[in-house]
Amino acid sequence: MKALKVEGRSITETDIPNTLEALQAAVDGYIETLQLVPDQAVMIVNEEGLLKDLEVNTFASAIAGTMIVGTALIVGVDGDEFTDIPGDVVKCINALFA
Image 1 (cartoon, rainbow, N blue to C red):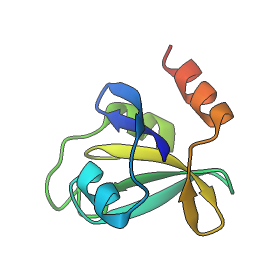
Image 2 (image 1 turned 180 degrees about the vertical axis):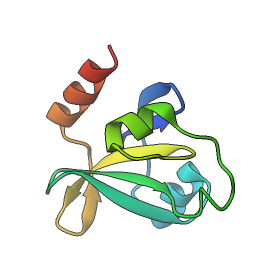
Image 3 (image 1 turned 135 degrees about the vertical axis):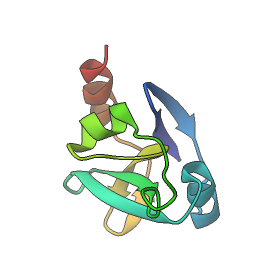
Image 4 (image 1 turned 120 degrees about the vertical axis):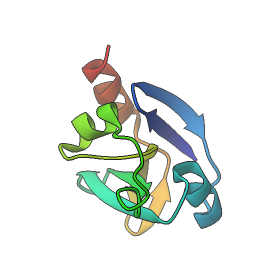
C-alpha cells in the first residue's frame, strides 16, 4: 500500500504491506488513527507514544493540527479499510512542506 511516512522533519513516500503487523512495526507500537481528510485519508500513529515519551514529530503535528509523537503514516481509506494514499492528498502535503 502506498503511504507517506512522516518522521520528525522528513516526509517520504513508501510502500508498506497492508497488515496490522506492518503498520504496528512502522509506528513502533499499537496503532491509532486520526482523520485528516474525511473518507480519503487518515494518519496512523503510535497509540502509546506519549506514554513511551516518544519525540515530538514536528511535520506530523503540523499536518494533523495536534501534537503527534513518534513516526506517523498517512494512508488512504475506503470505508473501514486502509488503501493507497490518494495522489491529491500527497500533492497537498508535499506543497505544504516544499
